Length: 464
Image (cartoon, rainbow, N blue to C red):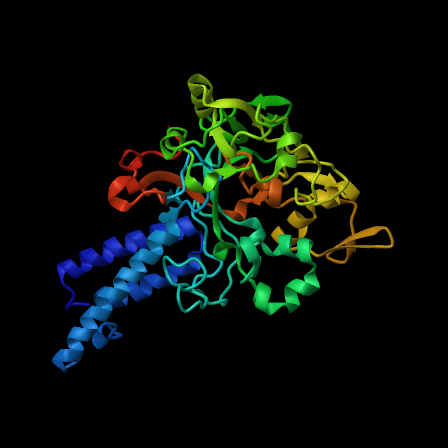
């Protein structure tokens, strides 16, 4: 201790203060034992922690220096990615036009408080699978329970939120068309999904923090009663205004000519988002499209449009007729996948969103709506025997939720896989809030010919 320099003592006190502050934030006070290790590293030096970095061989010493630098960088990136910021790319059009495919986001985990990782032993910046070699990027053990550290605030209505995909706990690695496992089971049957490895691949389980990251807008808060009537959202009976850049799918009959790329760019419609429908005459007739004087259909497009884009078409006289795409028929691929409700994409609910500490009566309707919350998210067993409901083997007539839940939707209302498709998002799945678009690329254009959307760089997500 006498040999310790003033600089060593300064480093010791600074590192110790930061370490104690982190321990208090984390709430795991057994970590304070680490102060003894910090003391030995900087002051007592009883254990030769850095001996491996000073081999006698010059070449080995150079290698050791590189290894030390790489390890330090990996540890720093790991903690930053875990507790402060995470980078995320928008892969689909579900939030257009608030966020665009090709937007690269900086996600602030401090906004709602970072989570202690379920799988702490993992490779930084890789969600669940190493590319190319296709092996897991994390180790299953140890597995920690959900805990969220104190953040800067709480999830608010209309926040754009990044979260882990709720239906991503079980994954068929080769699932066709990126269908989630549960959709495939409903579509093809569990036995086929598990036995046809050439089609569906291996079936794997992923912990919460290793599930795919999704980004949607938070529409429903814990305890809300939510209903969608003809695409309009009502919370506790009050109308919720649409986001400024919300869009719906329309069937647009042109004046007789195919539209050019410039017209689609004016409407902000990408190449992947436009479909010509003239090969489906029955579909066109069902939507009120009439044949022209030559006895054929004008070119008809199915395209997503914002209110602003719709006004551009009408102002310029580009369309003979415009029809919003309707979906009023009840569907079994709408959560909770039951014929008890008759809900559709455009007409959904009313549904109550679970709130921590609130109780529900256990009946047929509530079991259909909330059994996944009770079992998959809150870790209980649930079965019905002889008309008696058993939770964890005990008879139960009511259930009290231990998590808050949220209802998420995309701004691209007709082309979004969201809570209408897979249900509520539990609080332990919340990752953070996008705070910055640091890069934006347009896949329809070459890199140096408009491929970078310069006007979107360093903008706040969802603010334009």
